[in-house]
Image (cartoon, rainbow, N blue to C red; front, side, top):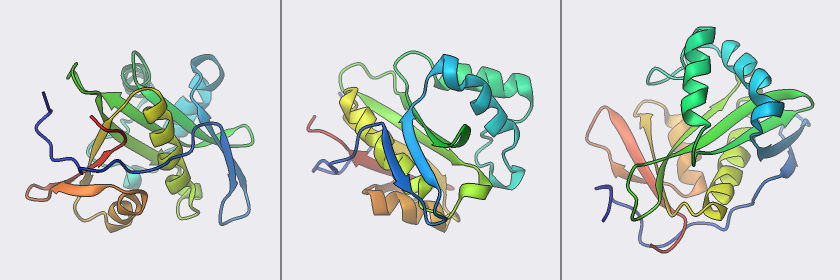
Length: 182
């Protein structure tokens, strides 16, 4: 059984698994590691509270403490795969794979968020690649995402990592990647 999306025939990768550390284009040491509820929740809520409204897309991340908390509960629980990009004690970015309900083949939706002060420094690429490695390690075989069709920087980033367009007919541009043979 499939989820109705068109996925590439061949798996992409290989992708690194967390934790990984890189120096971004600004010379900052960035560590991407698995999200830990106890260690990271407060800092992640703070990151989303500080998120620039201009960088919100498709209604996420939400605004307001309660809505952010509820949203994080939904995307960090169960079988979701989450990684955070850390610069010292600060969280500079977060990426998540939220599983579909399809029980036969493990598919998940990707979402990524990088604070404005860290954008354009290569952190997004590293965050996505490490998330995909963590996802593959967790048994995720296929990943999909939607991006607003005018968001060329994001589309270029996703293509660089290996995503391919699957549905470009609607307002949102849908892209997919295969992590493992299904």
